[in-house]
Picture 1 (cartoon, rainbow, N blue to C red):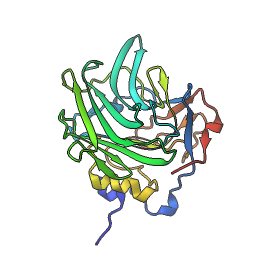
Picture 2: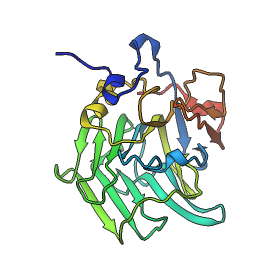
Picture 3: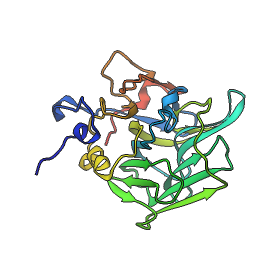
Picture 4: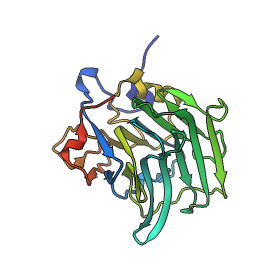
Length: 265
């Protein structure tokens, strides 16, 4: 049986040629008080900004000492540019479960919440992915923990719709790690990626790679890819390099170089 590399599976033309060329040496530690990374406000961060209707996916590695009510990432904030704005956010709930919240038409009252019903407060690295086909039914979003699919059909995820659904609006708001509005997250975060398509189960499994991060740079439909401490270019603290072709580098805020740590998946 022929085993495809990740780049071949995702359709990329720049697949990694060998594991020896890719090393994951660092992650970012956020203190939960005021640490965060801001990646700015880029159109590509909004789901389906391309208009191609391929879907939207998030992928990241996370380690949570206490998963309760932690902020992981968001393009959602209060009074940014003088007004409230809502697109999406990933947080955890009081039962230590991770969830994706999608907001329709920049309205906090209209939202889909998709929750993975597995507690993550074990102080262990996990790979998380959300893959959305842009639809508004409970079958349109799949989640993954360490390559294992979580869905409403499999009874290991829940989906709720509040209000009505149209689509996510492109708002004047920034993409941030470990922050949503004015609240923060205590966690380690690594290898964050956004995709302009709904990743398949096989593609998520290839990204999980048996528990070892793999190179995603050069993949098709890659909107952003932040390795959170590892760098191939000249960027140094406080810059978090975007390895995608969009080059939307992040900036460590209220952090110091000691928050780039060698604790990695």
